[in-house]
Length: 95
Image (cartoon, rainbow, N blue to C red):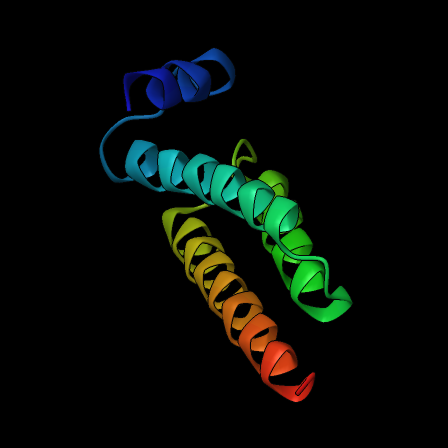
């Protein structure tokens, strides 16, 4: 966690409290989505994971209000969940 805070403070030294929490969540989402991309070889699941990674990267250091960061975190979570479901559905469909 300290490493993520360090990275946020490198680009957003004024980030504290909820802002810092959301930005570290976006960094965590980027890491998670990158790991998902490494596991998924089905195009749709990979695509959703890539979208989550790109979205988190787009907002993590931008000068945006808290409510925008909150939406970005939720969108990344939704995309990651969609990638998991689509991967499972495509696996089932291969029977």
